[in-house]
Length: 135
Image 1 (tube, one colour):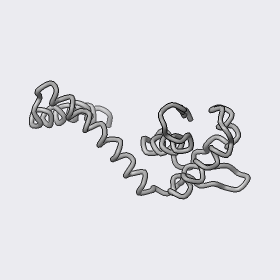
Image 2 (cartoon, helix red, strand yellow):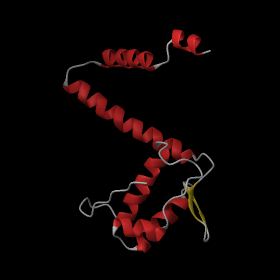
Image 3 (cartoon, rainbow, N blue to C red):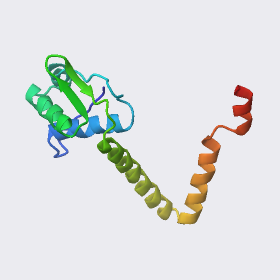
């Protein structure tokens, strides 16, 4: 699990950890049941106080993202959290906003952009011929 913190962006370190773990879970990079690093281990990696990591883990547990098992570690929750879906939608929304802003700067209208998205979606789908040859 790769987490990067910045002491210069004004966001408390524990919230940076919370945000990044939420992103990793929402994006599927952390799977249900997967163990997170021990509090002390993550604190050493990030060169921060273990209490900061403990606070982040408590926040994540309260949000239903992780389950803390006394003396057994911290794990990504097995149940699909509605928060995970909200986080995924939030991430995609931010990317859509960036795409729309860039398209506007390039004078590409929304209809053209939607058409392009449909074309790219079709191009990314397995073709009917490859599905029949795989059987």
